[in-house]
Image 1 (tube, one colour):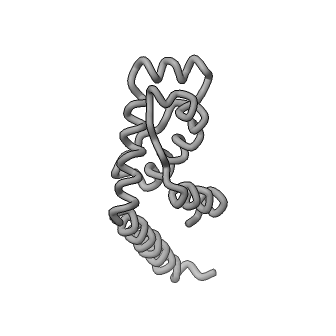
Image 2 (cartoon, rainbow, N blue to C red):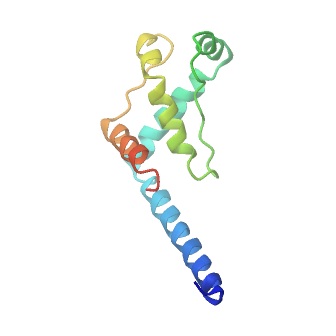
Length: 117
């Protein structure tokens, strides 16, 4: 490989990654997806309150992750952490009520099988 083409290749990869990011961010703006993510974010906030978090940690479960708008994959990480706590919040509906749509779960499964998507 010639080093003369390296700057062009690097630029192409950066533009491709940026285009993919724009596509993902655009799809996250769909109202039904926004509603599900908003519900999930509210659930995570409830799970991260001091008393509930202490209880989660006493059961040796991982604490839920809250998404950060500027982090590329944080919404996925947040939804995945909620799915990992599914049994906990199903057993404690008095603490939290959450119905994650099956389409969000399907999307997470696809992304976990193909992490480059």
